[in-house]
Length: 107
Image (cartoon, rainbow, N blue to C red; front, side, top):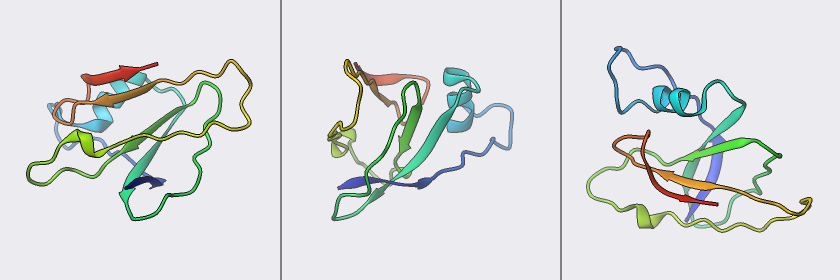
């Protein structure tokens, strides 16, 4: 089970050319807009509720994969409370090899 963890700070890469850099990819895709970056931590229990405000980006990032592993290991469950309806959300899963590419985009 994966659960939202603590705040994650993405650091600029050492060199100019770093296509795998999450820092550069997120800056290119989302600009300098307000967003939170959280780690996704493995555990046996559900984590604390994650509160998201209107128009706020929240990025949950898994640790780097070791060996062969599939993205099917990450499932999203949401229980929306205290929302003003209509309430919409978008969930995207980015390619771990090139974070500028979406593997899936769900509205």
